[in-house]
Length: 148
Image (cartoon, rainbow, N blue to C red; front, side, top):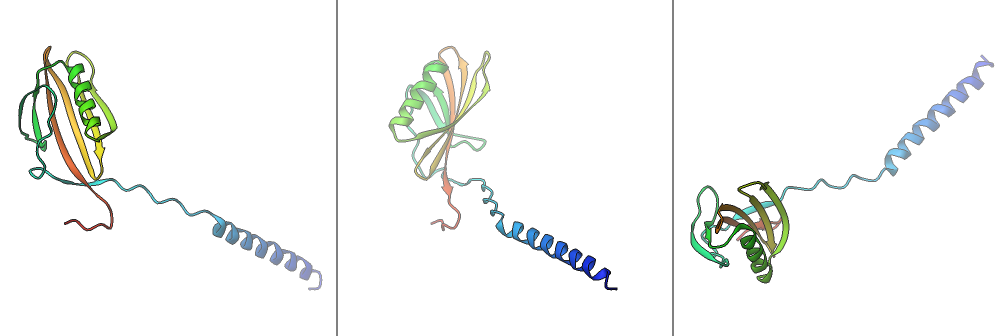
């Protein structure tokens, strides 16, 4: 029995030190950063007036979730440049550009942000001198903020 006491003491020492080390390691771990929440938005369709876009030929109330849609009297590249410049001049800041098709009939989705509003704009080539557009604006809902 006297011979087993040192082995038992060494076992307890190793076991308790290992358990304490694991507990300290778990406490010292940095907390994980919170996962980003998807941006929530609320439609403002019918509240805000239509945007004044350069070279507009036609502008009407949109369908399929778009606020407004229409055509411009210039080619695709000119329209994209002019509309982007006009939006930047009005205080919108660009966020994303998604090219849907880059071949014979190009299409692009552009997103802009201005204060608490988000603008999604789609442009597509109709023919050489005509470009189609559709856009929608949404109010960004911040967590914990009550809507009026």
